[in-house]
Image (cartoon, rainbow over all chains, first blue to last red; front, side, top):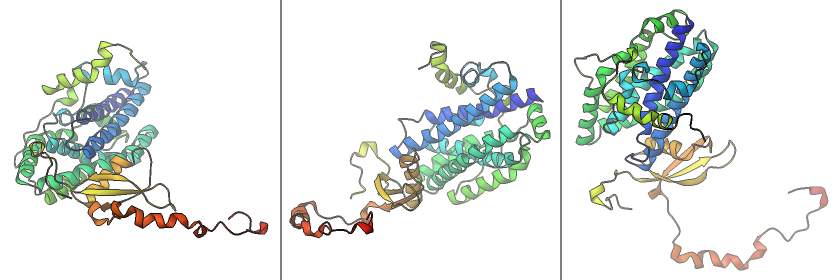
Length: 250
Length: 104
């Protein structure tokens, strides 16, 4: 059980770290000053959540690994994030949609964690739940304005849907480790969150005049450490400092 | 205020200016903290949250379209405000306050 719990925490930590890193890439490049602050704000929420998840994984694992070891000193195959969060920023519509899909899943996830049998998960959830509620609002409002905006913004946002929707099914995947955490009532069963996810997505898509793709070609592999081509570059940038200057601190 | 981009080649987002007021704590008044660009009131509130409350500055936000504010004319500053300068008797500081009143 403890090994399954560690792996589940790593999956969750990786989701948050990688999406946080992707968002942070906008810092200094956002289309407007207001978003140049908003996106790093959300990135910091996510990286903060990754930190507590990794720290807890280190404590439970009890092999002396710190949050930094998890974040900076693993190889690509050891990262177990879902593919959605590593997809490139592409444009503002892709970035908002990617985050929206993820937040729409994590909100009911953290809410359900209020009944977790593990007190540490309970504590992490109570903080994360408020942060993710804002992320949904922020990205959702943007999607409504982009989707129901100009011809250009509408077509870019619909393009983002066509590109990213195939990656959403992986959010609901549960490997045997996650499954055993579900059975131990540590984390909620993903299938139970599907209704909430659909409701969040549908209500925004409706207002944004966006359409879900008719056919889904499920993209997955991240939970097994099999990533998309973009992941290597992401990791080389994420890990650069610790690889170039091991143990550097200030 | 014009909505025309100042530099067409950069085509900045067409979004009007909003003034932001933050209330630091319950019971205190909302104080002007700055301005921002946003497409509408909802987006302005979100942007205000992200730009101006990152360091726990407040627990309530107001946003007002900048063009809803009517300002005094800087050209008339002298005639508007200088006449008050010579009327110190308007300050309620010429009374002896009995000790019994205590702090006022």
